[in-house]
Amino acid sequence: MPSQLPRFPSKLRQSSPLLLSIAAAAAATVVAVAFAHDSVASTKTSDKPEITSTSGELPSAHFLAEQGLTIAGPMPSAGGLKAWAAYRDQQPIPIYRLPDGKHWVIGTVIDAQGKDVNAKTLQSAVQKPMGQQLWSDLEGTHWIGDGKPDAPQIAYVFTDPNCPYCNQLWRDARPLVQSGQLQLRHILVGILRPSSQGKAAAILAAKSPEQALASHAQAYADASEKNPDTLGIAPLQRIPLSARDALANNVSLMNSIGLRATPATIWKNAQGLVQTRTGMPPGLLNSVMGTPAP
Image (cartoon, rainbow, N blue to C red; front, side, top):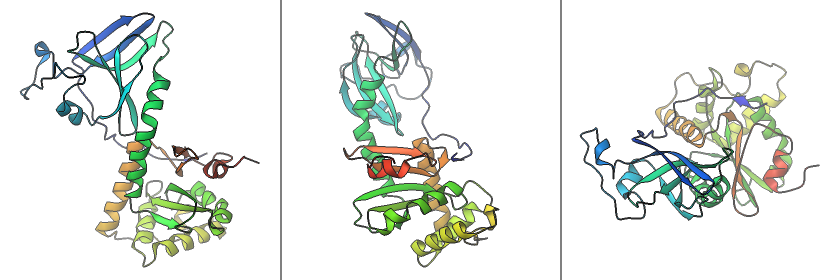
């Protein structure tokens, strides 16, 4: 079982539904909320300037930016509506243009049985660009390396110092790390226990965070005491602002990806597509390395 995180307020932007549209086409039905700041004057209720975009293929760039939407590109759509694949905070989002060319809906196209008929197409369209954005975000974190920098496989791991499954992953990965096949890049978070943040800060603030993390993990693994708060590195009582900011940014990124448990492991498969797993499911390291499970 993975160690469960408390829920944090989502940073996803919430858009106000202005129009509920149901458009039928063939055997498919669009059930969606229309985001029509830009095209339905009768629904304008705020003092904000109205955004107009009635001639373009998509809603205005202003509107898309306001909603935090990144367009991956056009995609085929069941039901005959013109469609685009988009994403926001690692969440795939479809955009459909209605036949009048002046209104768009953001939602789900379902058939008569309620099945999302475009789900696979949407996921396929956004998987690569969304994964590239996530990988770039991970590279920009304050991660701690475990293994050779030139290892052929890299995996990022959201790690809490008090997480027993994080420690199990660290132990199980020793042969791969020590043989130079794998580098783990630990992104520390401090959310599981009262001492978690202080321990994570102590590792980040150490003269050698890599050595501090290794020493903590080994001490945690060797201890007979089962109270996580007393295992491994001593927590800092006064956390430096730089460490506090780094930990807050790490938690914010983890939350934006929708990850709710540690360890959360992220890597690229042989096709270069980003993969994510939480906890320590059987065969995790085989999946990371692209090798058959025993």
